[in-house]
Image 1 (cartoon, rainbow, N blue to C red):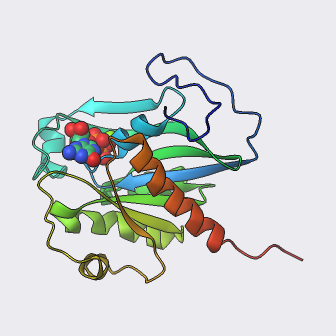
Image 2: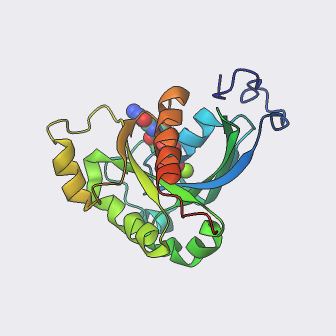
Length: 208
Ligand SMILES: Nc1nc2c(ncn2[C@@H]2O[C@H](COP(=O)(O)OP(=O)(O)O)[C@@H](O)[C@H]2O)c(=O)[nH]1
Ligand SMILES: [Mg+2]
């Protein structure tokens, strides 16, 4: 079941579009971002209650020069545009998920894709932390509140403490940092919920 609400049918496999649940109250645009091969497409596919929109292109000799294949040898495609999906959460919050490339060379696209977003879930691969510096720079520059989710890869180093990981990414103490398995809907939803809670806790004061 993709949706966190019990009444929403799972249509991920069937592909039929579904209507928003009657309980939908807050519609929120969220970026799911991170470096090449970190699991953005996988996460959006695992949680989306509508058939995810997904644009990919086969890796070519040209992109092999710029997309770092170290640690992701199994990949034969690279995302050149965006993924899109939707997930309804308890409490009437509906997230529209925009899977967004985090490489520096996509900077020109970034402002357009980020327009109207309330926050970002930044996926990080603990095997190649420095691959996340570009995207963290882009997110910080745009001023978007964000949460960091370490995606679980089997050969990820396990000896780092949370404090060391936080320091390596230069995160603020208040920035949520969780682990997830992007292949698992429940785990991915938990990561999104950590971001949503952060957005609720740090929402700007209502104008009087
Ligand atoms: N072991 C493991 N593999 C994953 C996980 N998430 C993604 N993958 C694999 O990693 C590769 C890259 O994932 P993808 O979603 O295409 O990355 P993207 O470039 O960020 O969209 C794919 O082969 C996925 O099957 C995960 O949580 N655990
Ligand atoms: Mg992708």
